[in-house]
Image 1 (cartoon, rainbow, N blue to C red):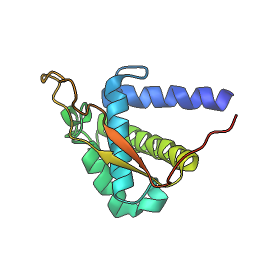
Image 2: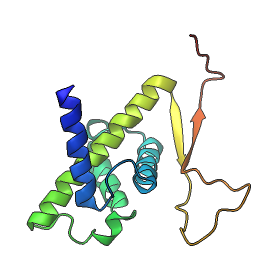
Image 3: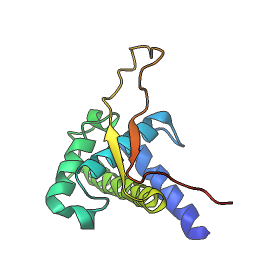
Length: 146
């Protein structure tokens, strides 16, 4: 149990370094879901299954999303802030991959589809899609036994 607590603490530290508020916030959830959808669309769920080129593309893509986009110029620099940001982004991308693997293990072949990033100034209208992704489950049906 101590390792899980330590892992959660590290994730919270990484989120803070990248500009996310503490806890499970809508912005972090949105960011992680978009990252998972990008991984799915490109056929990988970890650095080992992506390879360095695809992982670099994912990293560049993640840096375009809020709140990282405000700090993107620091990423990869030789400054302490740039080094910390690079390590924290790698950790959060890895965590998103772990969550994607869990989803795939639970539901089988799942394809997450990105939806455009919503402009926070635009009110949500009734009947519009507001979710970040729509799970598309390739199996005909899922059954649950209790």
